[in-house]
Image (cartoon, rainbow, N blue to C red; front, side):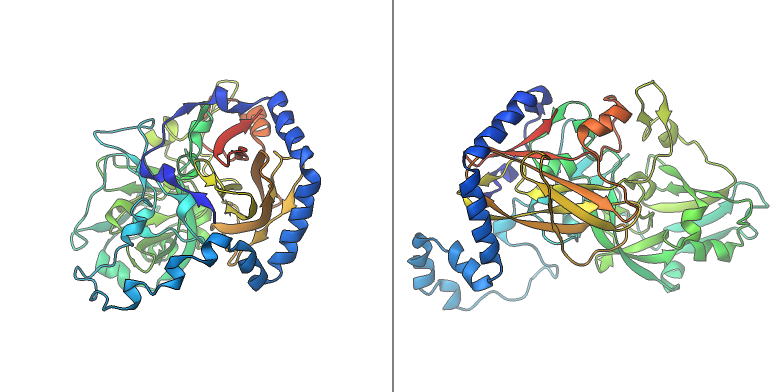
Length: 460
């Protein structure tokens, strides 16, 4: 694609949102400019649709006169005439040196300990639905540790003696001998897109939505371990998951999620052991629920008869409502989507055919549909859902688009299998107000300017 990711070289500067909000006059101006070239736009769009039906034709249309006489195709390159390098000497593969700009990035505007506590995944540079382990977003509450698995233990106990018949302690070796499951799921921090609540329009997709990743996780269903300990499921309707990091992260998980079989303790990620920054050697996987409940360095599961109300459940990860009250235990990540290309910080080099693409997800099940608009939500077109479409997992979507060089407002709107439709920013703020931090799942807008630069805006 004719896009540039020059923003990836250095972290983006935070830009205050008032200058990035588009009022009614500004939006109308964009539409009026688009109307002037509407006939040509529709003609080009029809031509592109015809070309898309023929791969060779589309490839021919994409080749410019300059590339047809390109020396790089006319002359045999050195790598086609010589001996390549030997197998990786360090025993673990690395990306190409030409991809060094594709990396996680930190932000100075979020909660810090003695060091950076958040890094964002480069969504704009990824393909498909799986996030490479080395690019998976990070959120730490007291830094990460590389724990010796031979010394790590997982304890299961009850809040009183009648809730668990036989408290147990498992070694990693004992856990890894048990029957395992492998499933693809997304994990999203509850604060993902949180800076937009505070009228801060960060410049790129990496910063607006980069606290989400998707992996294949492997581990043991938590219910299997609870069954071995003899849990009383009639009284024990909640568990407290506790991590072994310095913050002793603790989260309440309802028993009905565990009884469904979806919750498991994971030691594997993307075909290998978990990375230290992602909870090595053991973490909890709670599909569809905000990432803070996926407790890393998992060391204890306590069974109780009511929610625990721990520090990270009553002080943090609560939603401040317009009336001043806090919503607690709003753990489910509602249906959401974002266009990753073209997106903020990118540059369209010339007019013509583009593949609009992005990601959609829902904590309540599968994504059923994604609609895409190029005029700020006035008109919508159905996007293609690329396979696979999995439960509580990222789904890739795409849409053919011919850019005519006029300003455009690109949005995506996802619908999940429950019928829930992703809200606009105005719709969400009408219910939630403007003082929240967490669970912002509103529609994202990217402004494509006449010079091809793509900017993060919010349509008022």
